[in-house]
Length: 279
Image (cartoon, rainbow, N blue to C red; front, side):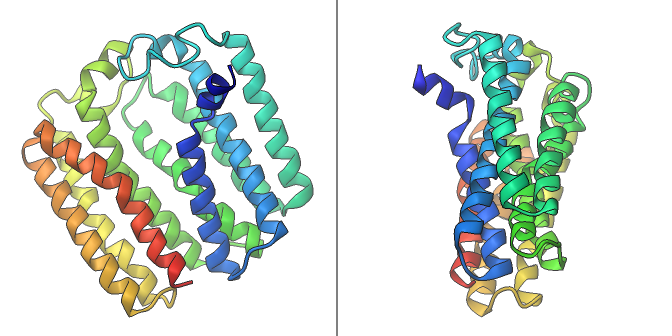
């Protein structure tokens, strides 16, 4: 039972949220402490709440998809009303922690992220393919939240981190959607690959965003956030990611899109890890 409730929190995604928020805090503040710990706890609880409420809203669709049909709610291991209550408890706990232990901007950005993800992104997936960008917006917020927790304001450097995480997500998710397009179509999700059977738009979007992410990951070196070591490392990693994206976009072969998807799982930790080391 505990394992099922934990899976509702999507712990791997919540861990990534916490790590990228911590990166924003460290780059803005240069140190850790109890203030960071409270902010990360509040952000992690809020991320877990978003994941839980997302699964509550989509449990009927999840039951129709091979990749999600074994989740706790579709399998009946957790009742929908119990998942809903758990999601609200997580959301309220995160809200209270940030209200009393952080600043207003951190609280505002976190609650905005939860609202966009749960109230806009999740329901609109059934009506428009443009939700990929809405989801990417919510997914790119953690570095901003961490920066806000450290400084109480946002600067250009914070928005650069946001841009890196935002652009990284588009090839990542389009590759995932393309590999599972029949699954998404069966569940009624209007993701781009499900509406684009020939893949022309999907291919163009993967190519465009794979290319555009390269100059953005180099911006920290030009804005004084990192040195030559990061610049060279980001150039190598970014070029490799761009190459995989362009190759995947060329024919949308399953092997190529699968390779791009798995490479994307390592790409962001590598880029942000190099920034962290140089902080």
